[in-house]
Length: 273
Image: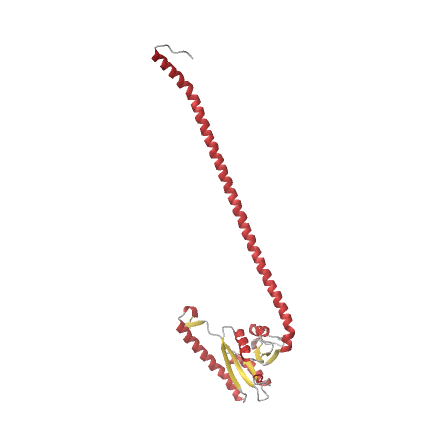
C-alpha cells in the first residue's frame, strides 16, 4: 500500500466538540493496524465580519490591515483548537498530523485538498450529532451531500454521525452513480434553460406589448394631428368664404356712390341705376 493510502483524513471543524464524533469513529475503525496516520483536516473559512463593541462590520467596510490582523488572529485560534484533536490521538498512541487550508467555501476547500494530496480515504460528518436517528441512511448536511457529488471517484468516503457509520461512498458506488448524476445534471440543466427561455419569452411579450401600445399611442396622436389640420383647413376656408361674402356685400354700395360723384364732377346728372 502506498504511503498516502496509509493515511486517513478526517474532516473536522475547528471547535473540537463539533468534530469528536468523526474522529472517534476513525480512531476506532480505521487506525487499528498501527501503521495508519490520522490526518486531522480542516478548511478554515476567513471571517467576513469583524466585531467592534458588540457590532459586526463586514470586512469590506474595514481597512485592509485591520482585516489581515483580525484574520491572522482567528487563524491562530483555529490552529490551537485543532491541536486538541492531535492530543487525543497522541494519548492513545496513534500517529497523527494536521492539515489546514483556507477557502471561503468548505466543500471547495475539501475538494481542493483531495486533488492536491491525492486523498483516497476520508471521514466526514454526515450530519450534526443532534440530527442523528436510526432512519439516517445517507448524508443530509449540505457539506456532506456536496462532497458526495463532487469528490474525485478515487476517494473513498465514510460518512458518520454520533459515532455511527451512516454511508460509504466508494469507487464502485461512485462509478455506478456517475451516469445517474450526469442524467440528473442534464435534466436540471434543461430545466434551467427552459426556465430561462420562459423568462426570455415573457420579456419578449412584454416588449412587444409595449411596442404595440406605443404604436397605438402614435397612431392616436397622428389622428389628432390629422383632425387638427382638417379643422384648421376648414376654418381657413370659412375665413376665406366670409371675406368673399363681405366683399360681395360691400361692392354695390361703393360703386353707385362713385358714379354719382363722377357725374357731379362732369356737370351732368347722375344716371339712374
